[in-house]
Length: 247
Image (cartoon, rainbow, N blue to C red; front, side, top):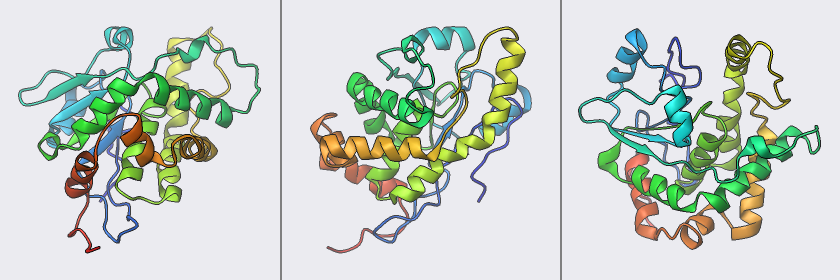
């Protein structure tokens, strides 16, 4: 199976299937995707998207981002959820190179877990429903907001932290395309040091911080998001291959 789905105008569309879990199962392919903005889908790209038979799109961007850059085209049978999880706007946080990019990004991700509780709850609960799959989760670059939600889902189903970190860092393969697009549309604007970057250390720091606060990702999901074992069990049941191992 190919993890990267090739589009002309979408740079970071990936299947998160294929990862092994701690109980010996595997994340199923073609159930959960992560992506950058789907507002650019048209022509052959739209045909490629339709061939995936996606049932649900979870768009984590703010309403003004959707208005400015467009949303996934409306299709019969396609459910669309706009769930902006970012509270404090990152572009309002001064950045002078200190702390390092990885630490700066991890701090912003932790803020999302504080500010985006209601929408994160809805997103996780939606992904947990088998009849919503296949699901695409996306934001602008498919890196930050999408990255932290995807990491949480993979952790909940039992994927090892090293694989979660590696999945996050794959966005780095699209960095050059993101930068090229930015310079084309903003030829005279300054670009901050971390634009398009997905250093592995960012995700490692974020997961460590979340564990320090809540014991684990599952602890955060149950204690803060208020989702119960049935929801987490639903995620594992439909996202993973093979029977549930006996206790």
